[in-house]
Image (cartoon, rainbow, N blue to C red; front, side, top):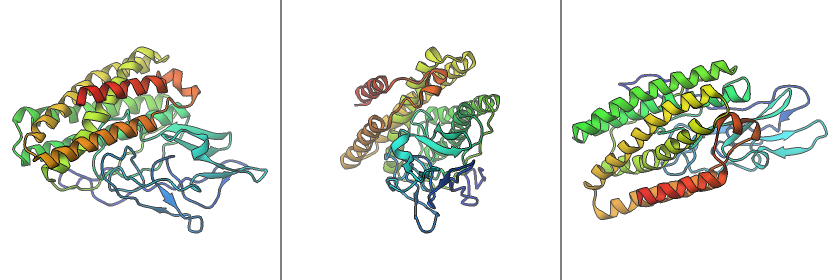
Length: 328
């Protein structure tokens, strides 16, 4: 749910996820869980989520409503007990960007908080996971993040105006927000086509921030994540087995490439207004984000890999290396 608050979302209905078991013969072990590697922590005794806070650049999103936190997932989160009493940790089964859910048919893995999903706004909350088939869930989560990117670009526009940025950057941010509206509709349509329904994002209000904070977020979410997302979308437009997925990703890749260029332009304008120490911190955040991409990139379960046309882990690493070269 996105609740407008002067153009941004309020703190109501944070939508923190507690993943419960469903189906026969399976249950959670009394702890709350979320996306594997998301930073959602739980207590074995309480079964409740705790919100983690952090700064952009951690490469993880979720675990609260304060932006991408840098809080590791506890070992007991997502533990599953089968009929024989064996305990399996989801994090040991699914790659870190994939969320495992216990269903009547077994454990279903879906992609969550993907680095291919573009610019995340500060204050993006964890939402209840979408239901349905794995492919539909993937596009539902993608649609949620695309819709959250609308808020990210609208807020970027407000901050650019507040700091008297060149009008060409302001207009480009406006256009990017409109692009993300189309992306959310397109991926939402794919989600429904494959048996799922997107969950609206919840984004908290964020005031206009100082230039260094904006520059760090732009370096992480724009120069790194959006550039990576544009490259991955371009690959999917060529490689996805599903014709409709290829066509959709082709349109998204075109727009995300333009968003990546905007991020680089904003980066250049901001760094020209920062002192050397602040510029060094921005560069370090960018390098950390690139490292996080290398550490968390996974091509996902084979059942979805072909339909989505996701790049292999080795290719994803090559893409990250190219981004490092371009943004150095």
